[in-house]
Amino acid sequence: MARKTKKSIGRYEVTKFPKNRKMVIDIMEEGIKKHYVKGLVEFDVTDGRKLLKEYKLKKGMSLSFTGWILKCIGQAVQ
Image 1 (cartoon, one colour):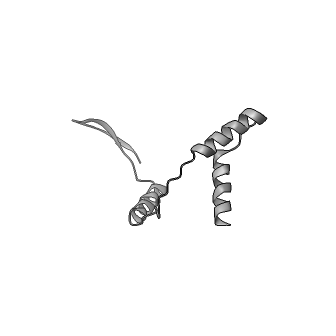
Image 2: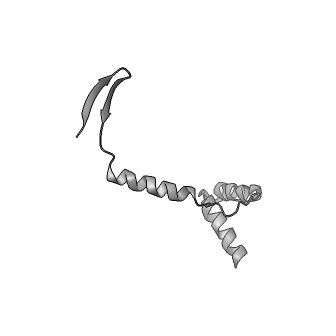
Image 3: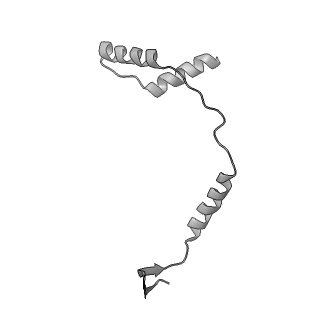
């Protein structure tokens, strides 16, 4: 039940904290304890971008940069 109160700092509203927000806070507290970045890599994709741009100029259709990256990673793993 909300009630409005007038104080020296202005009007404010007191409400109950929703149950779903409590769950979010619990998840955030657990997340702080974990480190999700396992590694960071850097690649020079200048030539790849150039090839994709040339393909678009020749064929009139653009290819997905993300798709191209995944293809390259798949070939490297294979």
